[in-house]
Length: 221
Figure 1 (cartoon, rainbow, N blue to C red):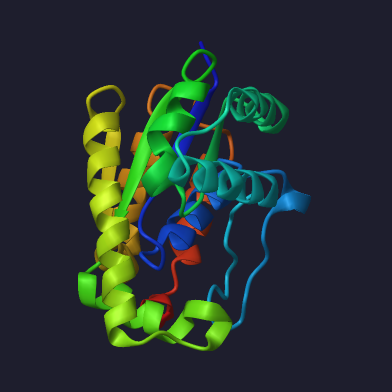
Figure 2 (cartoon, rainbow, N blue to C red; figure 1 turned 30 degrees about the vertical axis):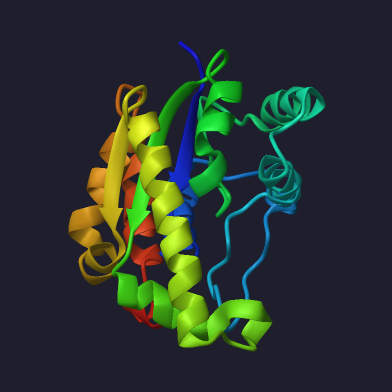
């Protein structure tokens, strides 16, 4: 069986860090531990759960996409990074750029990995308010700027998910529901992420930790 790669896709400030943190707590490694972008007390108090190697590289790829397309060298480098970062039978990747690049990343991974997609959704007004509070390292954004950037992300995400959904299993999560009812929502995520895999000996303990990871106060970030 191919190792499983889970792509966490959602607009910036939609709750992807929380979902990725739940997966990481379950044992779905979201990157090499020493490469993970750490917490920020005002933006992501529990951590970003993004691997900085992928984060920086995908930013370069996205810049090339806007100039006409990723290069062959970037395709080769993506496959190298995937091989270098694979951890165990199931692991994950989360980055805001996946709303644009999810299909490209999936195509690079498909020969060697079983792909699954977790799509994270949040109320439009919640995303906009969060972007206003947290954009530009705390300097905030105007309402119109936050609306425009959110619309761009959601439009790109919709197209990416339609194309990925035709090829790979997709699980949709409503952020507000998960924060309000983690005991009900987290087990659905677990069953999707680990479907068909051997339940670990400490699985029940990990599940309890994953549910506890979701702090209701996260709705304010």
